[in-house]
Image 1 (cartoon, rainbow, N blue to C red):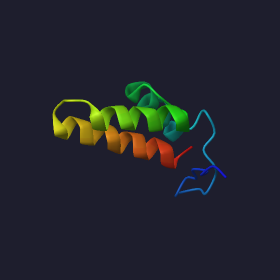
Image 2: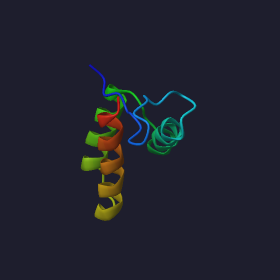
Image 3: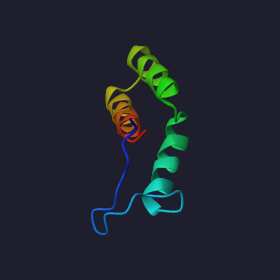
Image 4: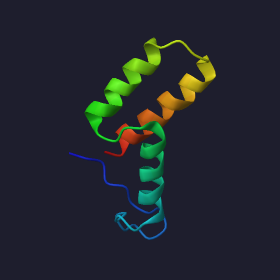
Length: 70
């Protein structure tokens, strides 16, 4: 069952026009993936690729945030 994001102020579920839904889309566009499968593949690739550890941690945290809101 997918997590449904709700507003802490009004308790309503976020629809596509809600600012948080737009923020999620922007984050997915930044990461380059949005489905569970794409995000899991992206995480494995990031963990095994050479690069600056701090940058990889930030990207992996973004992936985890997206996974929690699918």
